[in-house]
Length: 246
Image 1 (tube, rainbow, N blue to C red):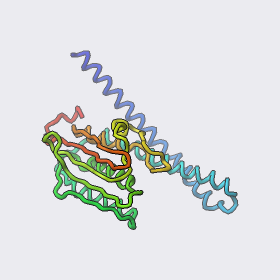
Image 2 (cartoon, rainbow, N blue to C red):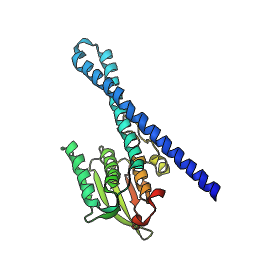
Image 3 (tube, rainbow, N blue to C red):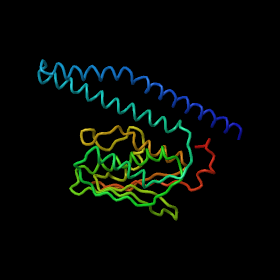
Image 4 (cartoon, helix red, strand yellow):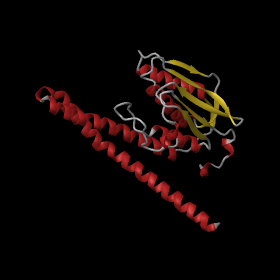
């Protein structure tokens, strides 16, 4: 048992070191990338009349790649913060969190009409900062993947799973083949091209990491072109769990 404990401690230390290393790299990349983005944007604005169409296209590619890399770095840092942050256990109003996230999405596209329904009085036990990340990522995905729908719908609510309460975010968007369900929670995993839908492929990895840290589970039910429903559960006795083991 002592050898097993020793190996577990080695693995934990190794994971922490790797996490710290990836955080430092991502953080340090921000400075030079900010310079690249700033000067390429200045060049695009000031010199666009002097460039032919091919040169302008090349410069636009640099600008867009810089923006995507900045998103990627931000998402990697968020994923790292989820692991490093100390969880603060509280009663959380998931209904209020979901409505705030949806209001933010609606304000980003005020002309877009989406049929939204959020179950009232949804309560949970956990860290409100981290649970906001869960809802923000799941709802952002639903908002994104219903953009081609003629009558987009998003539902947020609760259900019973094996007599235990689970929360869900459901949409009628493009969905995906359920055989890829395990793959989508991996970091950098995407089922659609960036030309079809933007994003870094880190959002669902963040969702899973938050739920895992709470001692819960996350899963999905989906069909290609028929929407997706993401579920997550949070144990009610979360506050009695050993935080160091999360």
